[in-house]
Length: 430
Image 1 (cartoon, helix red, strand yellow):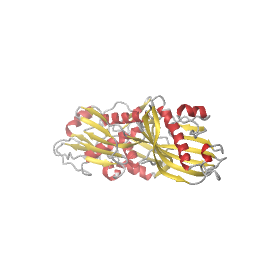
Image 2 (image 1 turned 90 degrees about the vertical axis):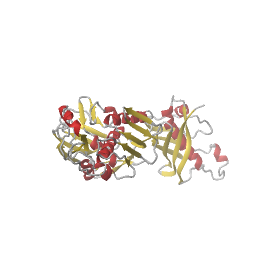
Image 3 (image 1 turned 180 degrees about the vertical axis):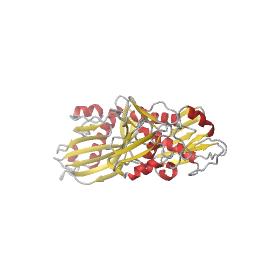
Image 4 (image 1 turned 45 degrees about the vertical axis):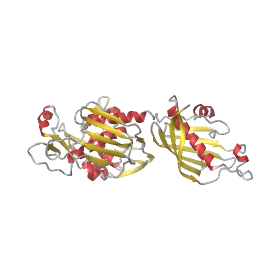
């Protein structure tokens, strides 16, 4: 299900102690324009480069998620990213005064409250999405993550844990599109096994950990859980934070068994790689594409080529083209010949051809063709007659290696004459 991008309405800040370093740190969250993504900066580094929250900026780390750009790095970003993923906040500028974000109470809930206090607002631009088509498995010993095509409308996660005796090992399922992230996931605090504490402290971890922000499993002290299966819910929180590094909405099912940050991040890198195979830069060809360019990509020819020029292409996301309608069109001889009127189905065909041009640029040199597979939400809102110029606009709603969904609209001047959602299949050419 497509949606609009979101950011926050006003800047907000928080101060706290870093969970691992134990240092005091200040964090500032600021609104960002559509298409920015979540970007981190360090206020304690002169001329600090932006650190995008994308899987390509992951760096080796233990028990946390760390991002790096050049000399700058920022760690323990998973709780904030989990809150952003859970609430659907896509664009944010985040400034930290140190190399590690505040641990707060060990959960994502303080970040949820911070984002909500800043007022989450929609933006005009659509959020991009990746729909899983091909299953993928990543294993490390007896730990694994399985990625499957979606069984619903968004991202579903099922986590299967393994804990010391006395800790509830029931699997937990979470549906991002239907369940309440704030009450089901965000409250869950980070945890540690009792036998790991000494070695972690010796390795420099957990200097800011307390009994309030870290649940100890397997110790002598009775465990007071905030919610049922709190450790497993925190594992899902971490997984949501790591999958946020794909930078697009994920439509698929994830089954995780005993996974941690390393496997989570490997899956995020895999999904991002799959997504980027079918994306290009957002460079715009201001000179447009003439009819020779169009015919190089499209197989259509007279009398069925219904695009005269492509004016603008933005990566694989959007394209704008024109069709000049003249009395010499072959269909006018038989379609209301006494009052020439362009058939609505041919308006849709023109939109489909422009969509094909946009998508075929991705399929160039792949041996595949873009074929119209379905038409939905069709509306014809006005007539098109000789002398009109059809202004065609198409925008990708969703795309993967074998399918794509396009929102399409045709105008004459400012008047919308037809619109539809077009679905395409990428098939091997003969």
